[in-house]
Every structure is written in C-alpha cells, then in structure tokens.
Amino acid sequence: MKLDPLALLGHAINHLKANPEGHVLVAVSQFVLVNVMTFAFIFCGLCGGLFVAVPATIAAAGSGASSQDAEAIMALSSLLVYPLIFGAVLLILPIVTMLYVGYQCAALDEIDGKDKVKLAKVGSVLTSAVGAIVAITLLQCGASLVGVMLCYVGVFLTALPFKWAHLIRYDRKVGTMDALGLAWDGFMANPTAHFAAMAVEMVLSMVLAYIPLIGPMVLWPVVAVFDAMAYREVYPRGATATTPA
Image (cartoon, rainbow, N blue to C red):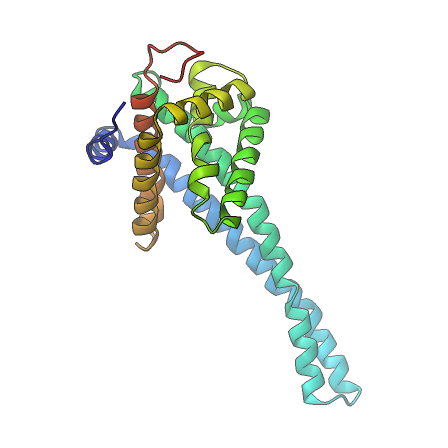
C-alpha cells in the first residue's frame, strides 16, 4: 500500500485541531514530568557535589594545602554530578518510552472512533501490558544500538522493521512474538511506507525540537497521531490477525 506522508501529516494536524483536549493534557504532563525529573537529578547532583566539596576544601585549606590542591578536590567532588545525570537518563528514557506507547495506542483508538485520548486511558494501556511493552521496547533499543554501530544508517535496517510492533500487539490482540513477526512481515511487504513514515517523523522531531518550550510539547501529539494514522493505512482494520495488511 502506497503511503502519502504529507497528506497524512495534514490529516494528523486537522485531527489534533478538532480534538485538542486530551492531547494537550498528555503533552503538557509529559513535558512537565520529564523536565521536573531532569532538573531534580541535576539539582541533587550539584548539591551532593557541594556537600562533599565544600567541607573537603575547607579541610584542605586548614591543613595548609595549596590552592591547586583545593581546586583539585573541588573538581573531583563535582564528578558526583555525572553518575546522577546518567542515572536520570536511564530512568527517564524508559518512562518516556512507555508513556509514548500508551499515548500512541490511545491515539489509535481515537482515530478508529473509539475512546477519546485521556490520561487515564494512557495509564490503563500501560498497566494492562507492561511486560509486553518492556519486551518490545528492549528489542527495539537493541536493534537501534546495532544500527548505531553500523554508522547510524543501519538503524533504518535494524529498528525500522519493528516500528509498529507495539501498535500491532495492541490493535490485533496478539502476543509479543506474534506482534514482532507481523511487524517484520509488514515491513518486508511494504518497506516504502515504513521508510516514508520514519522520514517524516525524523524531520518533525528535528524541527520541533529546536522551537523553545512549545516545540517539545507539540512534538508528541503530532508524531503520535501521525504514526497511528500511518499504521492504520498500512494495517487496515479489516485485516486478519495473521496477515500484515
């Protein structure tokens, strides 16, 4: 099935204009959560570094150490910030990914004329299939890492086939392995549509990420709705659970 990404992007924007309530709430909640967690970890890291550095520097100065030694102690103490920031990334990325999956599935239901997008719906999607979501996400991350080692171009060959595995699992009510198999079959049957959808989402991500404050909040709704619409084009509702399209 041929996919018209620009026309689909227009449909996604029009859909958001007609149904802004739930999408705005989800986008703002995600933006606030990520930023609060990020700044909290940075703040804790800075405070921890100062808590160690200041007494150590005072003690070094009292013992007659040189100013260079005091500066070295301060620099070493500041290294406490980096493990906390790294830990924040390891914690925030899975949370954001799972929230996005729940939001994406809720957006698909709204596009299909079922329930409207709500925070409660996003939460129910997550809690109903945490194990499957984690398993598919880990596979996608592993495939992406393999692609990065292939000079980034490989991401399109390793991660792209499983792009819609989450939506397939949720939409067709199949198991994790069946969803991955159907995702692979769908990609092999129509790689052009997968590439076209990924290209639009990458361009949107790069453009909106550089718009302060508003850009990151707009990014989630636009990409999630566009992705759900692209999925529905490639995987129509009338298809059986054992065929890709």
